[in-house]
Length: 264
Image 1 (cartoon, rainbow, N blue to C red):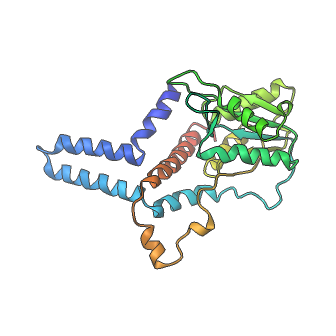
Image 2 (cartoon, rainbow, N blue to C red):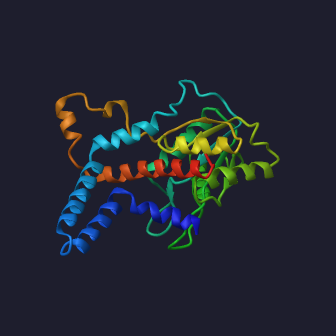
Image 3 (tube, helix red, strand yellow):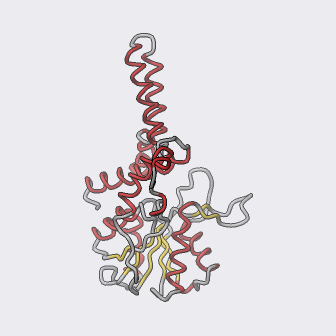
């Protein structure tokens, strides 16, 4: 139940869901409380506008992505852990496993392995499977890593986790089952840059010291507005920014809830 609610309730505070909720309230108040309805409609418009601008997107993302910048020379380690959320399973008409926006995680992990940064790669991620039976994210990632040259005997699968805390908990359990001490291993943690603050805190709360190896940076230094024209454009709404602002809000909510529960 907690897992289901943790996925459902945040939808009501993301910009699109919150705006729709406010518009429904405005319709309810339209006849009896017209002034309240107008204020609610105006609020929903402002929320949608701000959340669609590069200005707000950049502000929210930069604060997350710049917290764990990788060192110039990433050290070698005992293990690479890659977190799920980067694939869509092979299901017709898809010809094979698809990569999502976060697919850089898998590519980066394969690159680190090929550079000799660690001899093993642990892939962590289950699959919610609300609509149809699908393979786990761990299985999908393993297939892609093998395609990119990582041998199967160098890949450890953790196919049961549904959120970031379970990624850490179940990865730790898998390592312990393999007679490895996760609290003494040097671990390179690979996930999206905006997700790294929450992921790192959760792993370290469980006693696993990790070296951040973030990827999937959504905001590059060149994306920052340099002149008045670029600043003006940063105030114009673009639909794609709603998605990125919602993802950033998800991370802030996750950090707050996990700290509240003592998980991070």
